[in-house]
Image (cartoon, rainbow, N blue to C red; front, side, top):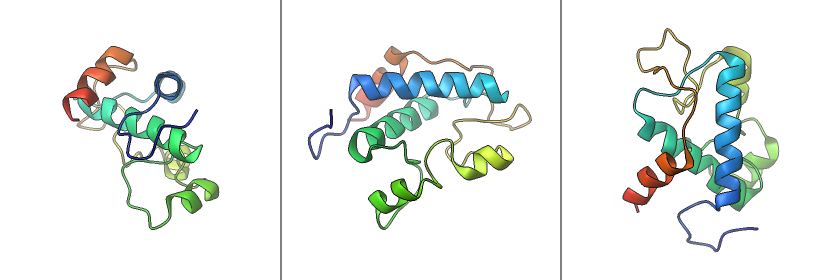
Length: 121
């Protein structure tokens, strides 16, 4: 299911898929969410929205001239190549323990995401 153009939030299905992915990936890679879970919420929402709109979780923290082409190329689809190769996450979604902004959480609830992203509508 795609969201109508101009819709600012992801579908519940995509949001849940991206939330579960983020938790599993953080645990598998030994990375942590930002100390400010609001950052995590906005990034997960952005990934889910791109999954709805583009069919792929394109990094929401970069500017693209052509989002469809970038999603098809897959370099910036989460987890992006820099994250997979060097554990470098531009979005601050997956942070190594030595990062000053790394928190202690590897989980986030749908309610935490929606309460943060609803506040920014």
